Image (cartoon, rainbow, N blue to C red; front, side, top):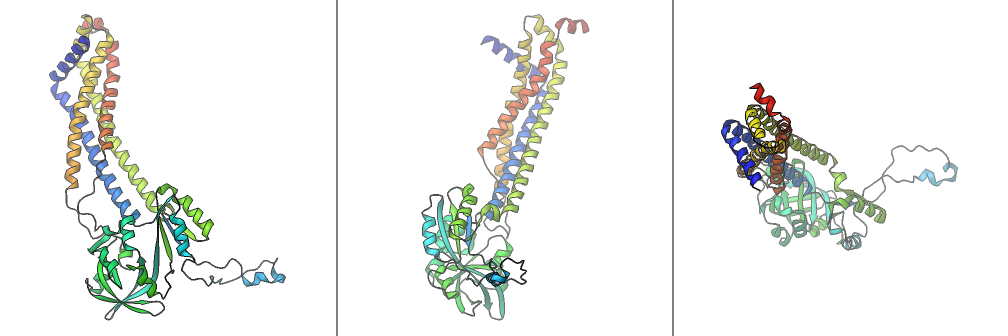
Length: 420
């Protein structure tokens, strides 16, 4: 114990006598760790914001009845042409409705599935929005507004109004912000909605929503399921889509495949629906971590160079230590202690700077129409980043000190003194 204390005192003395070099090495670690924490916190926060913007609005599994061409054509029913090679041009789709048959029993069965958190029905319809002489095409979706708020964070995208107002208002509508701006509409106004069958409904605007995606905000609006069913002249069991929220998102492909086999419907899982977006997220994360690790490695090389030069400058001290009875292992331990002291001090200062900069960025105002729910720059304050930063600082400084300390361990004090 006393020997370790003596070695530690010698290490501190060496560092303090070369304070400028020690400070330079510590600052290398400090700014390396600080830059790593700042960069990785900001970039992962940005990636998470972009992921949430897309994935919060995307069901884990989307179920609908896809209209497809008939697999069996009339010519195949004639025995004369049954075994012939038949070519049929301009194949027409089956005369099916968009709605899901027996939707309510399917929803009940899906809600009993242990993998399914909830199954929410929707009614989609192509419509024209009419206000005065202005007419715009788009879609209207009937939803269970309070369930959408609970499971899909729908309230985050309502920029004016309240979701409860849609639930409590007969023939109410949440209008896309792009439609509202183009048609100069405000809350409380009425907009005429015309379905493809010619049905005209005056709907009262109870709020505006903004998803951040222009193609959605300029075309889509939301109403209650009951109102949407009246708009398409459908019965109370008229449902066009079912959105699933799963307990484990990784089960989405398996659940989608099971739904298609069991009910004969089209089921698109979240991975398939957002394949390109997922690829972009993976690449952004890869670049973020690659740049961050590079910063830490550069800091480690700086420490290595400084300690390497320190050993050459301390050759006389090494010779004296060995001549007075210190072993090569003791000398090596002294230089490793110096490296660890630099790593710990620099790492702690780097953590303080990184956390400070991350919170500073988190408080900078950031407002854009494309991201209505974001008021400041996104930052991910994950404690793992801090743990990784300080751990890497200690490991990198240990290695940076261990390699040159091996040379100090093998030095012959007689050769050093003769050289002097």
